[in-house]
Length: 464
Image (cartoon, rainbow, N blue to C red; front, side, top):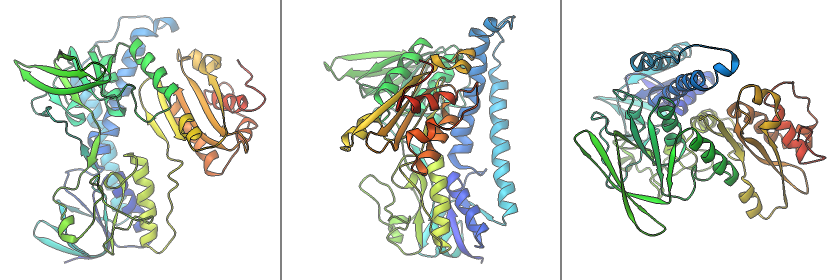
């Protein structure tokens, strides 16, 4: 029976990064993973396959809407859904095989199977119990259920995000329940490929928690792309008959009941920690009221030697947040000072236009009692964005009016997911808006819009 310094349960972004960092710090490490491939939900049925479909569908959209404007003439390409699915699968395989290579490189053992924590320092997989000095719970999350909506991914009519990635064919109509990141990304994939998509959201705005101006701009832009929105609606049920789904919902404003039919219903109402069968109760590991693993500021549970990270604990369910926690937990276990700055964790929605944000929204900054100033710059004033037919959108930067320190930034436009990191670095170092405004940015780039928003916080933007 092998003995380890650390066993990580779960090989998603949090788990595999934690394992690699621990191995780099001289620990003997194993990872328990029951899925047939490494990488967890993100690489297998989440971030990576969805981005492959988003990229492919965007190329198709460009061919149908913008190619002729650039002198690229010819008929619209035909969609071969099977080939597109093959491209997605190849993308996933390349990434998961890459994690296998990293495990071998760092001498990390992959224990194949589902782990159960029998007691502190003991993890059972199958019939074998492994001894370890420390355990990290990195089991990720699963789609949240909704009363009255029974998901059947095999049936392909009412599906969750996993099922939506492997539909047998492109549906003519789709209802998406939930206007969060997952629903909008996958909804936009199918809308670009010709599906009539209707998004039903309980709240009165899409992308809950995001800056209000970003919410409105994104909804307007997606509506132009063909997505219909029903906001302030509570879904009561979804049923299937003769291969068609019927969704029943009530409008909250007047309690009126409505129905809509679709070929496919995508349930995208969020995710919850995946902790089933892990043996936490028997091991004495405490949970929060929301069903997450309870931890302290160093990712330690109430049981000595057991840690938890990623979607299993509180905070945004983001792969990069899990990665940061994985590295930090590994460093704490190795006797170092692990750290995660939760105030500087970016979020990105990979629609077109992309949406990216970091730090406080304007509303949250004002609610904190600070004196706040806001600088905005539209992409219509950015030469590169207009050349790409992506002049809609803007950069919105928020700073403390007294210190000029950057408190947050919200971008809707081309390359938003890449540009946000400039602001992340600035915030990590406590930069002022003037620091960004006085930094030379290459021309022509979309990143110039970030500088212009920073200039707007001072003497004024140039290209407006």
